[in-house]
Length: 91
Image (cartoon, rainbow, N blue to C red; front, side, top):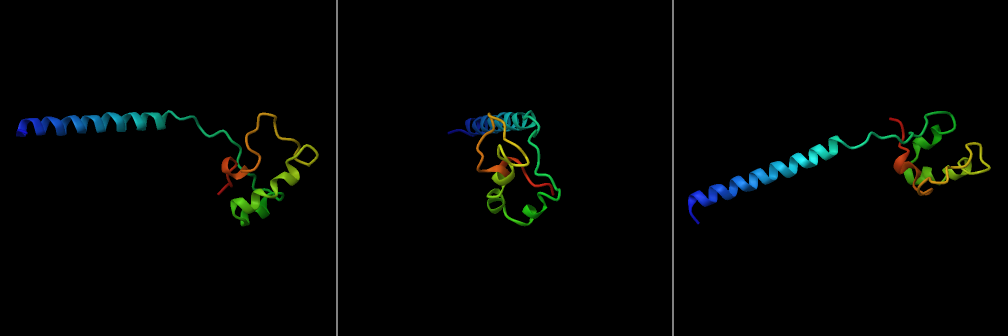
């Protein structure tokens, strides 16, 4: 392969890298903002801040149910077993 062909090949790869990288950055910049409510830092939830996620999630159903003080979750609510995957703790 001649030096000219090698140079063109490297240029094509660099341009392809820039186009793909730019597309990824543009996609990430246009992602929607996070709209999920965070876990409140109040008296009811404060004890769960000391636990890791999986341990804390075991207690969510005690209040977040149709008869609990927090009430029922909406019908279209996703998985009820991984609460803190979306409802993150407030730092």
